[in-house]
Every structure is written in structure tokens, then in C-alpha cells.
Image (cartoon, rainbow, N blue to C red; front, side, top):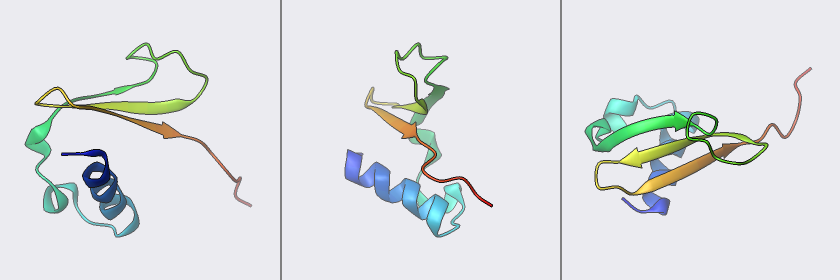
Length: 68
């Protein structure tokens, strides 16, 4: 899976309310760690997703607006 495919899967799960099991094969994911657990040196929060083939994706989470 490339970055575009990963982004499209994540969008489908979050925006379209699809079940993860319906949108892609979760067996392809080796691990998911927080930036802190993965010891990523950043002030941001986020996740490191490692695929079975060693491909790694980083998802940075930045709050852009506060709700009412």
C-alpha cells in the first residue's frame, strides 16, 4: 500500500463511517504505536502505523479548532 492508498483508507474509515474490516485488510498492519511509544521526537501527537512488509506511515494529529 502506498501513501495515497493509506490516506484513502483512513478517510473512508473516518469520514464515511465505514467499518475498518470493510475498507481494507487489517491483517496487513503489523503494529500501531503512538509517537510517544515510538519515541518520535516531536511536540505533536500522532500514530506510527507499520505494515507487514515494513512500510511505515506516520499520522500527525493536530487540533485545528476548538468546539463550542
